[in-house]
Image 1 (cartoon, rainbow, N blue to C red):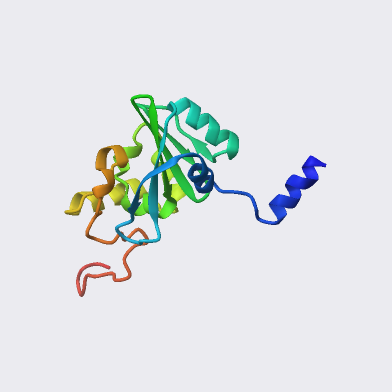
Image 2: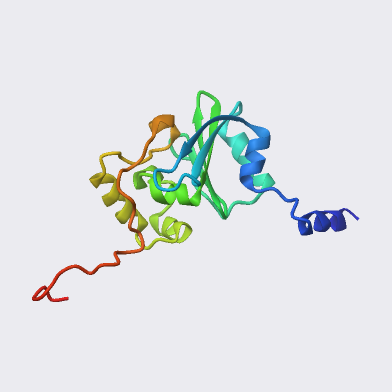
Length: 179
């Protein structure tokens, strides 16, 4: 009977995504908009619990596609449409739920060092060699890139140049350039 009820709820589209689960459980602290697309955001919540408890709760609610190790008080949970960063500070945990688009267009690649391999990020973000392309974009931009809420905070405005992850539409060059 319970299985039939769960299947009925799933069929009716009443299942929640990880953003809704976090929103229902924790207090919203801040919302950061993407520098490229205002529809892509990162929402930061405060959980008055330690990182292990928050990570366990979220993983019990919805199984992530990828889970990083805990490194320097941070852990990453990857879901279909969101990347969740857990950052522990003084036995409180910040839960940052970012759309995949926000991560692709705004994050400093070094934020993920030791947490997720770049080839995994390439797959998640659907960009070949995202780490290298984003690092070049971040270094050439006067607005810098997002380093996570603990490092950058809510004052983040983003890089001033739009990413060109899909390649250039103009080949450039001219006569004699060997193209």
